[in-house]
Length: 62
Length: 278
Image (cartoon, rainbow over all chains, first blue to last red; front, top):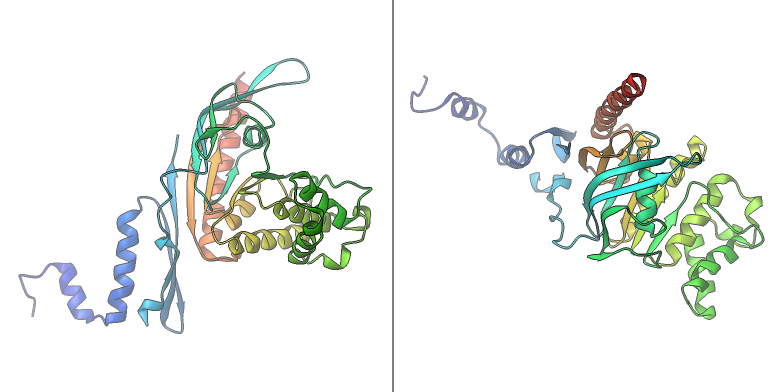
């Protein structure tokens, strides 16, 4: 049943029932996304686990 | 454990006082025909202590002129070049320069070349041998200590130059296309050595290299500053948070390389169009 008090994003998240580990990964990614305007973020996965987050930020200087 | 996720984006922010600072730097140079050319046009940027920065730009964009100012070999026409907050007025033992040609003294042995660098900055004779030996071992040349430079390959000679530069324990290593004259394998080896040496310096040494090799800059640097065609200005900055030693096959590195490459090609095309319109 759809709960009207929840946003679409919250709905999706609760359906996924994220593990603590997954929440930590997403928190890290969100932290990076809040800091960069342009760039690339790469998650490195080994054996089903994110072991590394790499990123490159780009700034226009002209 | 999610806590074991390695993220390179967590490094502390740059200290308030930069190691190197350029403020509106204009460098002009005179050509053989007597024409005065503006090499860099009001260039401003900073380099923090322990940072590895690569300046990348098309040929003739003023990279070498800029490096010469930082080395203290050329004075700027206007603007400032500051080292630890003080204007750079000449060369000093706090900065070592690695040139494209290793410039070793051909009449001295490999060891002699490294020891000479130490003698020039006043290291007592008894200490020189040990320091030279340690640095030669660090670049895997201890077996060649007594060889003459002409007996070595180009890559080995550049490793001697690297050992000589770092044996003097400078705060800053400046590189002017330091691997430009090497074959592909020697170049790759040197790139690995430089990454290792920089990592082992525990964020203490500041490296600033100029190059027109996109892959090299992306592989080596924390920050890549991309310059325009002459007169050189800054176009874009890339901050790369990826573990070392880096690999060109790394997804992030490959992606940044292609982005910078596209930017440079655009810049080169624009500068050719400007030339044609003149």
